[in-house]
Every structure is written in C-alpha cells, then in structure tokens.
Image 1 (cartoon, rainbow over the protein chains, first blue to last red):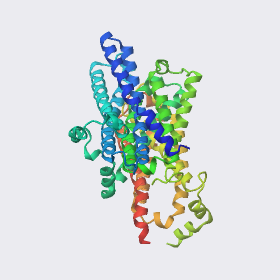
Image 2: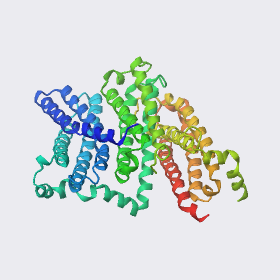
Image 3: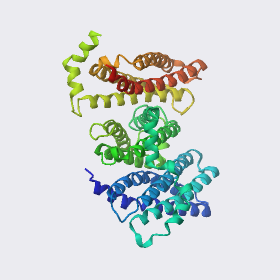
Image 4: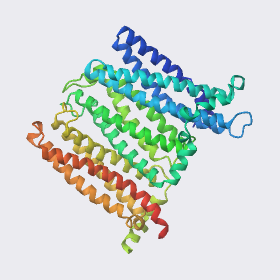
Length: 319
Length: 164
C-alpha cells in the first residue's frame, strides 16, 4: 500500500500536470479557434477534462506533503496554508472547467459542433484555471525553494481574493463540527448522487453489454449528463468530507483504492464520450469486444467505488 | 421490547455485529445494502427520467428487463436490511426515521408497480399519459425520501443510543 512518503512523491510529481496540461489545453483551444477546427477544440476539451481528473489527486496528496513538513523549521506554515487555499480555489475553477469541457464533448456528438457559447465558457474557465493553477503552483514552489522566495508581503496582498479564509481546511472542519446537520446533509446528497450516477452507469453499460438491444445508443447518450450531475454532486460533497477530515482519508488504503477506481472509471468515461462509433449504434446493434470490455470494467469500477467508499471506516479509520 | 432483545441476541445477529470480517461481517452487509440501493433507487431514477422525457429514443418496452434487476436489488436490500436491523434491533426500532423510511418505501413500491404496469402494457410505445408522468414525479420524490430517511437512521441511532 502507499506509504506517506509515496504520497508526497505523488504530490511532487502530479503538481506539474495541472499547470502544464492547462497550457496545452488553452493552446489547443486557441489553435482550434484560429483554424476553426472542431477536432482541435474537442481535443482541447478532452485535455481539460483529463486535467480536471488529475487535479483531484494532486490536491489531495498535498495534505501528505503538508503533514511531512510539520515541525520543519525552515518552511513557513503560513506559506503552506496560503498554497493550500489558493490550490483549492484553482481546483474549484478547474473542476468547473472540466464539467463544461465534458459537456462540450458530449454536445458536439449531438449537434456536430460544440457551439459558440459553450466554447466561450470552456475557454474562459480554462484561461482562469491556468492563471489560478500557475499562481497556486508559484506559492507552492516557495515552500521549499527559499532561493526564489519573493517578498512575502507582496504575496499576502492578493491573499484575500485568491486564497480566502473560508477555503482553509480549518474553517471547513470547524464548520462541520459546529453544524452537525452539515455532515448529515452532505452524506445524504452523496447517497442520492450515488444512485443517480450508478443508475446511468448501469443502464448505459448494460446496453453496451447486450441488454435492451432494441434501443439505439443515442437514447442512452441523452442520459449521460444526468450521470455527470450525480458525479458532480458526489465530487463536491466528497471533497467537502475530504477537506474537513483530510487526515482520516489521506493514509487510508480504502480511500486510495476508491480514488483509483474513480480515476480509472473517469478515463473510461472520457474514452467512451470521445468514441464516436459507440453512440452511432442503432437498435439491434452489438458493441465490439473492446467496448464490451470497457463497459464491464465500468460496472466493476463503480461497484469498487461503492465497496471502498463503504469500507472507509472499516479497512481504514474514517467515520 | 422482549422480542427485539431476543432478535438482537440471536447467534446470527451477534455474529454479524461483532465480526470484523470484510466478507460477511457488518461492513459487508452495509456494502450489499449500498449496492441494492444503487440498483433499486438507481433504476427507479432512470425509469422515471425516461417517462419524463429524457432519452426518448429508448423504447419503453426495452426498460422491461430493468424491472427484473430492480427486484434483484430489492431482495438484496430486504436481506441485508433485515440483517443490519437484527444486529441492533432494540436501538433501530426506537427511531422514527426507520418507520418513515418503511412508509416511503411502501409508497415508492406502489408507484414503481404502477409504472411497471404501464411499461409492460401494449400502450407503452405511444404517448405517455399525464397521470403516468405525475406518478413518475412522485416516484422520484419518494426514492429521494427513502434515501434520506435511510441515511438518517444511522445518525438517529447513534444520537439516541446513549440513552438506553
């Protein structure tokens, strides 16, 4: 299983991806707009969606890095806290960009083009994400590279906007303890999101596996955004559990396996959203062996997500 | 109540409650209960969404097979729910959330069987009558209520457990 040191390495590896990936994403968007190429725009959306997925473990593994630096004299805990809050702000905008990018990919299947408004929203969110990610990464780099430390006071001047107090773990933890209904409400929404997401995953993949063969795939394609809303509900509520109680989860093996299942299932979703032929299947058509394998893996992965989620307090020590 | 205490003291109840096994202990049955919830409420959501106009290219008749899977989920939860209840019968029977859940569940099942009769009928590939759509809305709300009250049972038992 992953040791605390592994998790720190994961953070130090992954933390390059969101900034560099978003430079690629924004670049592809600009090229797509200049060349009026739908394919390049779709490519940009796929990159943004992938970065939205990778940003989740990037943010979460940061808590391990933070823990490893507790009590180390040469680093400033204030800079770490500033980094963490600005990273969360960047993450929130990144996830919004990821959802819009997925929606653009989904819509381009339905209407041939992504559509000007959706493209504008995706480009805008991606540019803002890139700026915020670069800012958060810059503060992060100052944690352990004192040679490039800029004037700490200059950094603090933007803190109120880019890293507000209420994005700190301490604030969210305190809120959860002082408002017992908050945790219960989040859990309830998490279970509702589970049912919605699982329902869509179940029927769409069962169709690919050969059930309900008299239905064309286009009908299931229309259901996908509902599954994504379920996923959005569960990412938001899940991240609020995580941020509030990060140290219950970050070294919990069940949590690592749950996140692995989520990321692999997310990669599957990206592939299946991208893959044109799947959605062109008419009534009566059967999927290729590869698509059937992916469909079966989706079902296994989401049941795995439920299993390891349910096991968080039992394999690990989370409540 | 003596009956509740008797249920809770049955060897099988105690074995599940005290087991640390991830394969047949308390945690395992919680997992089975979550999968059953995904199957029942999840399929319930899909059927209702389709009846309300999402994914109209899917012929209603092709949803018939989902009802079989719905009942698989239902029986999984009947078994897992009963076993989970048995592990702490005296505690769980004292919270009103349990009865709220069972009442919501009964109404959700009535609504589901009404939807199933329509989906199974020869009329299902024609226009969906407003009465069926109203039932679908009610059915969605009822499943949300079942999930909410079910989730709250855990917190209520925890909060009131100390009194016993």
